[in-house]
Image (cartoon, rainbow, N blue to C red; front, side, top):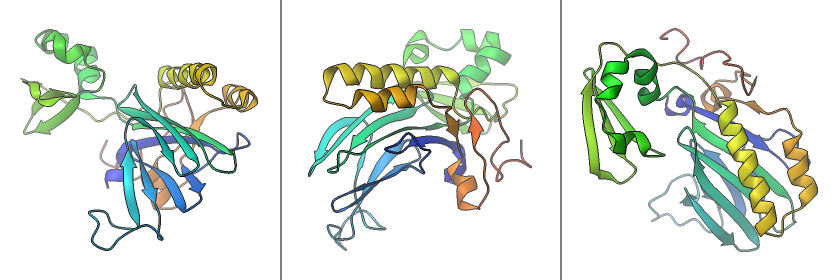
Length: 229
């Protein structure tokens, strides 16, 4: 069920659509929810905290993994932006984000008086964490327990938005700036900038449903939620 909350968009070395899997010398890097998993059957140990041959995860970092360069930052919609260059000099990039409208935005649009009561520190945080229990919404800043607030809201709805155009533009700006700082093939960045971006829901992929939708289009809610929203 958890996979159905997310929207993914990924490109391979030729600018083709990709499922978010990137090969490297000893395994693969996989886009999972809004972070990256590193998989390696050869390097995984049975006593590890991870299962399924996972040996690590990346949320926000620059990492050299053997001869593989991994760039990742946090972005809009509680997202991860990544660009990876493997040992074959093949480039991969993409976005993994929360695919539903966040509660803070929903409250701002539908319940302005409740929104006005939420502290500015919460509103300013780029990646707040949200919890919903019995009609009470708790917002934490990215420091979690360091600062949080709780509000009551008359009604809440889960609204599927996929990847928003603003998130796509923020991603393009990031990889363009990255090109200026790092040794990254300019033609690849240009290829991505000219692509027609389509996102998909990994939960739908699990159920064998093709849910690819162009950025800027709402698309259908994930099949798991379609009868609930």
